Amino acid sequence: MNTEIAVIFDMDGVICHTNPYHSLAFREFFSTRSLNPTDEEFAQHMYGKSNSYILSHFLKRPIAGTELLEMEEEKEGLFRKIYEPHIEPIAGIIEFMSDLKSNNVNLGVATSAPYANLELILSKVDIREKMGSIMASEDVKKHKPDPEVYLTSAINLGMKPEQCLVFEDSFSGVTAGLNAGMRVVGVLSSHTKEELPPCNLYIDNYTDLSYKKITELFQQ
Image 1 (cartoon, one colour):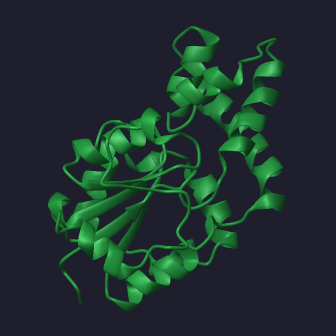
Image 2 (image 1 turned 135 degrees about the horizontal axis):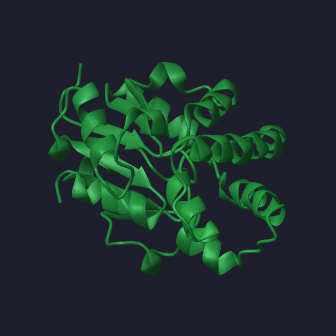
């Protein structure tokens, strides 16, 4: 087994381009409460953020405890209903993961989304058996940009942070990977390079990526 490197993927905007559907779900959720956030507000305060942050920000009061669980269940239920007919992995990621696995790279997924969303995507995108670590929002006490989910993923994979490469698409997600002491690839599905912290590499999709190109990042 290759013990040299691990690759850890966020989910939303990294494995699948879900953010437009999260926006639709939040729009429906907020419209029933007479709120209509702009696209700019969503980009700044939704992508890569936890539901507790998003709900508290837009409702302009702390949302926690039972109320948070109830609101999260309502919004995420809307998301799964809207997104299920459209589930499709980002171009090239299945082949890229297969290339990594054939070279004995340890793989993980680390998302701020709830397990129900992760399970929905894993039911349609055949990558579960490739993953040595699977983590969702229920598995952490502190959400991104805190590095907990990535540091715990590294432990699950038997790796040190400096042996890990993270794929992220949001400011808070990239920051979490950097805060964990890991290399980071910025996936430009939701933001431009300029909107993200400095990454080791930026990609639009996975069609040009390979195990060889990833190993080169560890030589930087």
